[in-house]
Image 1 (cartoon, one colour):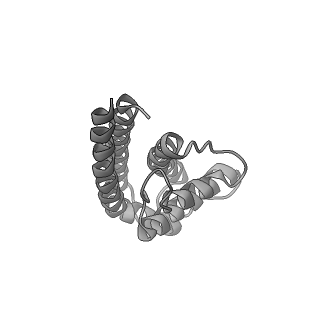
Image 2: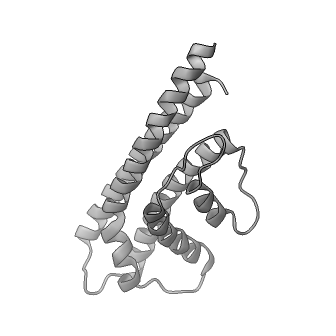
Length: 165
């Protein structure tokens, strides 16, 4: 592994965390504009799409990390779940990326992402989406803490690689 590859990974993590924060902020603005007791279905669809983008940004971070360190290439019908599970494990090439608590929270968003993508005729229910919206800011804080710890490891790897070059 080259230092440039790890520096690029670090930049990608920071970029995607920033994107997730912007998506989460947009979600908050959308919720403030809606009628909470009876949101329109079109509004819920837009909000669901935003939550999907939010989760995808966080999932992309894990996909990039595991591609670089574990040569993991997602495939098959269970790859989303497998990626999250892999991120909780320490491997010979890296420490665990996510804590078990972060994994549990992200898995809720993964399941929602799947339902929205695959349940073509299912109506969205605000009562089921509200917790995801309400918890998205706190989840991002926890993910950022996990990523900060991982970035410290990346920086150590960068120094080690640079000393060896």
